[in-house]
Length: 419
Image (cartoon, rainbow, N blue to C red; front, side):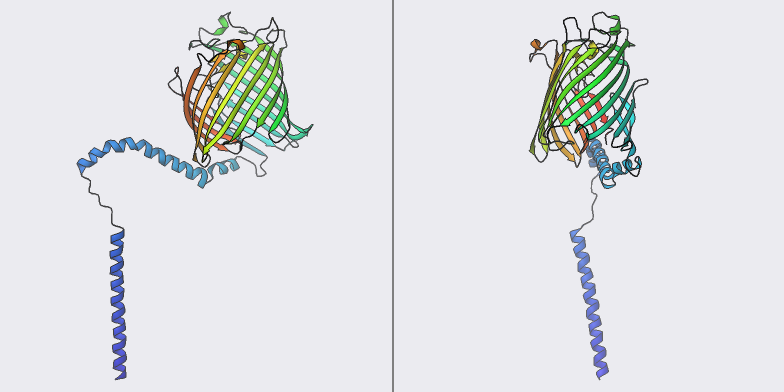
C-alpha cells in the first residue's frame, strides 16, 4: 500500500514538472517572438526602383562614414600611429625616422637623434617635390638652460625651386604664368630665453645666400629690367630680436588664450648689392571657446621690408607676400608681393573625434608699397575648411580646401614631421 502511494506521488511530481517546463518554454518562445519579431521584407520591386535614387545619393555619405569608422578603429582602438612610431624608433627612443609630406615641398622623411651627443636634439629633414624640386633642413638644438639659462638652436635650410611662381609686384597684378629658378641656402643661430611661463625673448643671427635664374616660361622675370634682383646672386647677413607671448591652454588645439610674436631685424648685403633693409613683423591670435570646445579665433598680422638707406633697394624675392598655405590659402603660393602686407584670419574650430578638429576659416589680406598707402580697400579674400589631426605638441596632419575668385578650389595638405 505504501509502495503504491509512493509511486503515485512520484508520478504526480514528474507529471507536474514536465507540464510546468513545457508551459514555461512555450511562454518564453511566445515572449521572444512578441518582443523581437523577425524583419519582414515587404518592399515591392516598384518601390525598390523608386528608392534607388535616394540610396545612390546617400551612398557616398555611407562610404565616408564607414571609412571614418574604420580609421577611428585603427588609429585609436588598435593604436596604429603609436605602433608605427615605435616601429620606426629604437628601443631607447633616441633615434628614429618619421615620414613627412607637404603640398608645397613634396614628400620626404625626418631623421632625429636625441641625446646622442650630450643633451642635444638633432633633426634632419629632406623633401622632394616634382623633380628636381627639393627642400632640406638640418637642425641642432641645445635645450633650455644649456647656454646662459636659455636654449640655443643651429638651423640650416636649403631650397631648390626650378619653377617658382612670379606674378609681379603690387596688389593688382594679373594671374600670369611666369616662373623663375630660385636656389637658397640659409644658416641661422637662434638664442631664446624664457622670461616667465608665458613670455620669452630671443636673438637670431643668420647668413642667407640666394641665386635667381631663368625659369621655363618665356615671360620669366629675368628678361625684364623692372624687377630688382633678377639674375643676381645675393648674400645677406641678418640679425633680429623677437618677443613671444603664449597664454593658450595647449599647443595642439588651443581653446582659450592668446599667442603673439613681435620680430624686428636688419638685413645687410655682403657684396654691396644695395639690397640692405629693415624687417618688422607682428602676429597675434586670440582664441575664445564658445562651448564644449567649439572655438573661434581671430589672427591679425603684418610684415614689412623698409629700405635701410637712400640708395638701397629691396629685391623682389625678398618682399613680403600673401598667398599660400598660411595667408590667403585660396590663392597660389606668394601670389601678391610688395614691401609690406597685412592680413586677418577668422576661424571656427569644432571637435570631430578625440584628436581631430573640423575647421572653417575666412581670411582677408593685401600687400602695400608704403606704410602711408595702408587702406581697407581692394583687400583679397578667400575661405574654406578642413580637418586638423593634432597632438599635444601641435598639428600632425592638416587637410584644407580653399576658395577664391582666382581659383575655384585649392587643396592643400601638410603631414608634420614632428609627430
